[in-house]
Amino acid sequence: MSTGLERDPAIELSDDDLEALLGDRALARDDHLNAPGFVVRPDDVQSVLSDLRDEAGFDHLANLTAQQYADRYESIYHLRKYADPTQEVSIVVPTTTDDPVSQSAEPVFRTADWHEREAFDLVGIDYEGHPDPRRILLPETWQGHPLSEDYNQEKPQLVTLSEHANPVQPDHHDDESDTMFLNIGPHHPATHGVLHIETVLDGETVVDVDPDIGYLHRCEEQMCQQGTYRHQIMPYPDRWDYVSAGLLNEWAYARTAEDLADIEVPEYAQVIRTMGAELCRIASHMLALATFALDVYGDFTAIFQYGMRDREVVQDILEDLTGQRLMFNYFRLGGVAWDLPEPRKEFIEKTRDFLDGLPAKVDEYHDLLTGNEIFQVRTHDTGILEPEVAKQYGCTGPVARGSGIDYDLRRDDPYGYYDNLEWDVVTEDGCDNYSRVLVRMQEVEESAKIIEQCLDLLEDWPEDERTVQSNVPRTLKPDADTEIYRAVEGAKGELGIYIRSDGTDKPGRFKIRSPCFHNLSALPEMSEGEYIPDLIASLGSLDIVLGEVDR
Image 1 (spheres, one colour):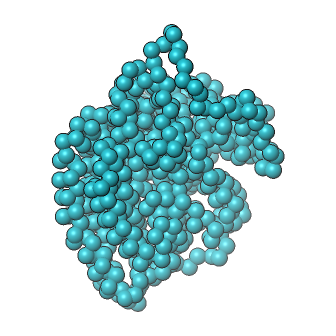
Image 2 (spheres, rainbow, N blue to C red):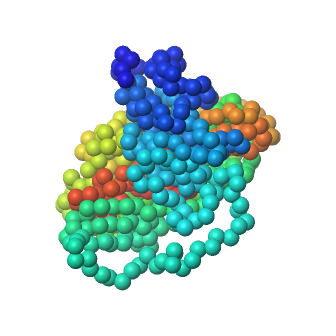
């Protein structure tokens, strides 16, 4: 249908415009704190999402949250715009408890493939028309859905040996096919964690890729639902993207909970948060660079060790600031745990010394890596991810910006102190493995700019105005059925959290939007038609962490 609303996607539509676009398909309003919400029928999902994408410009399916109430199941599609992520809308799809079937959104947004599989796996909603309705985190033989109301956590899982057959079968040949099935992982250094990639080859050409995840599923969402807002949830985010990005993860939860509970953060604490987050971004990108060099041409002795060396310097600074090297637990709702370490001048000088030496180190990486002929051959024009395909899979972060998508929540949906600082969003339009490496290396330099400005501010901040936390009630109990989705620009992309409060001091529903989950789902698009070494390079260029993919 056409309503004449077609326009520049950056132009904001009013709630009335959206309601007019949906017409009688909008059964009711169900507004969230950050977005208008519309309730639609289970059989109108595709037409509603198509119109919102094509006529209203909502081309980014940021998240899908599934949950069960006493009287219904519910799927919430969180839509945003790549051109302006502050424009958001939530599409709420209720189904009955005795027949939880909803139309699949996969024909409209490819990223709904994995999201709906996860919703079926954990909550138990069936999505009619889904192209691949399998479980995604749990084994196919698992009984029940762990986040459903009637799930018995104490019931043992009984799986017969015949149903749980050994996946490593003896070699055999099918006379009717010339293809070869190859298991890559789950225990292989090039898979960056416990990831199993089922690969079909025609000669040396990849014809099909199926990432098999779930080996590191740790029930993080359910554990957060059992923790109190004020004290017990904050230690968990460090364990999602656990390699270096802890403060970025903590900020995702802090931003969501603070908006939910209407908590203000002192300006001084915002500067400290911004500085710490960018230190984590540098450490994360250093590790990504080091492991990618190892993946692409096996350079363990030089680039890998150089990257780990420079990351260690950042980890030392973060340890001085937070007291920990990885699991920081430094953010608090309303601010941070404490001020800069004493002697304050010494900490600032140590951080500045690192920043002063960074340009020479980046030049060194370019000499060793991006200027290396082998590296160029392996990464130029491999792992191609066109911008529209990247958007279909909900890709964000360096993966999206390496495909020319100018999308960064630090600038586009400002939080912290970013909008008061001078820095640039880095994009490359090569759409290949090489471009994604260039984006991360240039982002290290932009992060250094941000940190330098934060240090200047912190150094000159009046001593009697150094407030690190606002006054926050000891017990937080947001109003029941208040819903919010908020996100930050993590090291790998848009790290978002949906929370529904139930009137208690614990969330009724806590859903994590992992950028690695989205980015990894695009791997088949990047790899089909290429060679096995290109597949490994493409996987490495995504910079995934399985702790965040599986959660």
